Amino acid sequence: MTVEKYNKRPWYLFNGHLESIIPYKTYKIYSVDYERERIELDDGDFLDVDWLRNGSDKLIVISHAFEGNSRDYFVERAAKYFHQKGFDILMWHFRSCSKEMNRLPRFYHIGDTQDLDEAIGYGLQNGNYRQLNLLGYSMGGATAVNYLGSEGMKHKEKVTSATVFSVPLDLRETSDRLFRGFSWLYGYGFLKKWKRKIARKAETFPELFDLEMVEKASTLDQLHEWQTLKLHGYDNMREYHEQNSSAKFLPTVKTPLLIVNAQNDPLLGAKSFPENTFKMVRLEYPKTGGHLGFSLRNKPFSWMELRAEYFFEEMNV
Image (tube, rainbow, N blue to C red; front, top):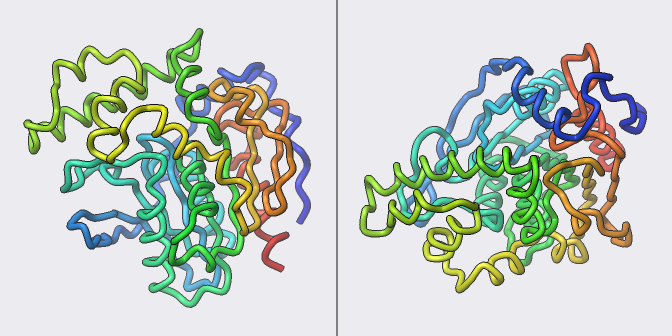
């Protein structure tokens, strides 16, 4: 197959905000009939995963976006699209994102590559796969990049290709943009969801969470500073950003990886568009597409599925 560059967005999505928001608010849910399973982890916690099976020898492992899950419209759309193409699909949830709160005090963050490794290993145990592809969105895409560039991952060598969309390659920069100008709308939405989740966690571990401070938080970095650092062992936000920003992992990626970031993505700044100088990483920057948009008029799928499919085919000959 061939796929054209993304340059024919619907006329009514005439800027990056509309390309990002309108699909999120209006696209129908595909009601994919997943089969849920649970991975019990050595630390006493768990990961929930959702399957679509064909008995295929080709597997796609999907990583959802921040505070997302397998019912996000772009995840369901991709799962349905690739399942119909004959792939097995494994959609794994970051801890606390499967509608059931995880057991331990910790939540998740962009550097949770070990949990992705556990999900991949679980998927490999459940089929005879000659092809293993990763598909990631926004924060989930960043985690996939970090995973491919990290040492010590048991199952990384089994990954044959990966495609990620709308990836914040620099956490400090994206964190700043979330609450600047019209983008405060995205930041506020994330903040509201995260506060609700912390309140739920505090019901089980009240000694670990200062809900008064949580309620006063006006940025995600403030919540990270008061909660993520303590629960995940970071000394300060600078350390957290430096250790987990995906840009630092690009030189060490040894698996064919495609990163697609739209130039009009309202959440991404200049540092998420580095020069394309990496041996195993292909960077593409369409002029339009928004954040996880890339809509196609009168189509039940987006350009993201087409682009990912073409890359998977190209890298798995």
